[in-house]
Image (cartoon, rainbow, N blue to C red; front, top):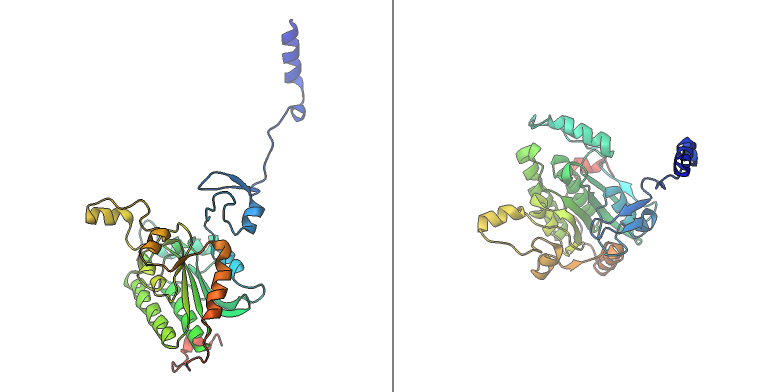
Length: 303
């Protein structure tokens, strides 16, 4: 037996524990940026509000995280979190709509695609609605419309500004016309809020599309957007096929909309809370207009 064979046999006979092993990295310890591919320590990334430390790419965050980023600690009070969607049309595609709703609720821990509540932002009282894209693409069904309408009506009654963080694929097709009705209902509540000379600021995040864009997302007194967010109504391919021409590469981005006057400012997530606080402070009503709107029965429960 040659010397080479002796070393080879000895290596095979060594216990597995003595052989070199690849270094294991705990799940969730590192996060890879979707834009530049750089690995970042997840703890540092969360401290920077999920904005890449290398390229400033804004990773998608959801409603719980948004609330933590914007609302002062121990001041959040959720409202109408008991509302759950039904299946009035008995809609069925590949599976029953009611089954999809139940699966989403179990997976995400929310009853629908928006969280609403009252809280303080840098010590300033606000009414906040945050859409959650995880729940059926943040689509706007009857419950989303009802919760946002109640939030706005309560803010009007209490003379508080409203901030809605938008992230949605649009109206929820499984609820048909009942979903489209929410566009008008929310818009009506915002008009009464405006008549009371109160501030409304929508924050457009990636993506904000469809019926949400066509209603309350574009009705703000001041419209803010995150960098490089997709914002639009119809899809890019639909528009190109309709117009029969090629659209610019940056079409339907927040930067494109800023250039064309559809949004007022692009604000990085790390500076959003400070910017909102400044805007709300500047627009505090000197003498709020008394609301002549009767308190809706559904709203009385939350008082």
